[in-house]
Length: 253
Image (cartoon, rainbow, N blue to C red; front, side):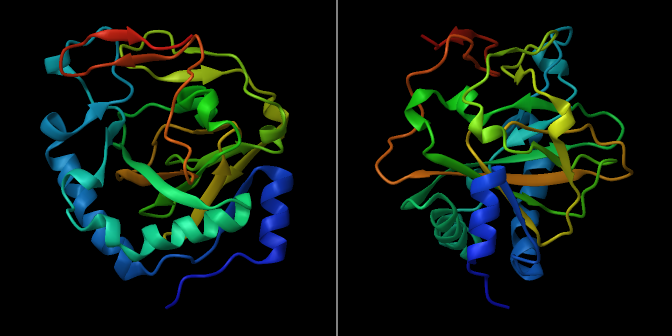
């Protein structure tokens, strides 16, 4: 199976709506390899992961890991050569009409029965002004996803609204952010294993808690325009939390 190229209809849809689901994009064998490494992160979450929904009432030693946040890069030394990574940059470049390069990825695992939502937010709310209209994310589920186990939701056309005010999620020790959106424009996106969802860095998005019977596993792949230089010029709400020490650092201006 070969990876698809972006066609004119897909490009037009992305630019109008701020998101795009590409069906049957990644071969199952490539997903099997990626999932194998992500399972290692779950097994070693206390050493290799953060709890992105770390409850403020829990000590570091007793974090419940309602959202396991890590990166397969920690355990897969040859991941940079993976076919899906090369494809993401090419496809994203077509959608953004920019030369895009892989920036970083995150594994986000939600356990069954004890997870948390990933609240409404925009990626630029985390990344800062340096990524203004220069970032895109490719979200890869490692199983079928729907509204029960935590599929992605997007605000249709929300990338045209600018960066919305964000704030820290109440009751969280982690640096999880959220923003207020008009949910009448909410589009839930159930997906099969092999599908990929792209969204613009200004598109508000969220995923619900996992109320299904098995882990909900996904890898978010963040890409930036070549030469952007990563995040910076942060907004006033941005805080970073060191989950090894619990130290909280305000980085926003």
